[in-house]
Image (cartoon, rainbow, N blue to C red; front, side, top):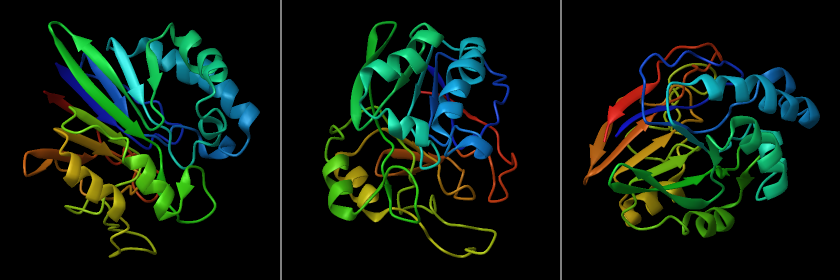
Length: 230
């Protein structure tokens, strides 16, 4: 199965040049100018964003929200809103995961995909919680799943290291997320949030990880989607 993984669009709707079977988005989708305006964000999600999803060269899109996605946070586990704003405008092509898993079928194989939008606290943003809530949410990650999508970057392998701007030199990774990943041992982990974190696909004890943010710390596009056969 060929996948594409990306994160931190912040309103950019980039061209995905390589056809794939599954596209994965790790949050922070909403344009900065409307991120706290929920009605405007909902309108954008079911029009411009849905049109982009519908035209992507893939069969399905699975995503999690991010700390800038207040509209997604507002519909957390609200099946009616998720259906009317995300599912129906994309004819079911788009699936959002809120600390939950799905079985994704491709040819004769089933892939388990689990996703979380939850982040450690850093300012007044969506999906940010104290450690106990994070650990409870991350505990729902199944053991040995195929793909994990997180918005926050786990504190491991430089995925959460900031390399430019006022916080350059800081490792802002999430230690509780890293602990759960090492306990549950998924095959692939994709994240974003820390824009300048290590974007190289890395491996530790059989776990493959990459930060797939598209924008840098200046909120301009600096990176390409990650394309991978799994």
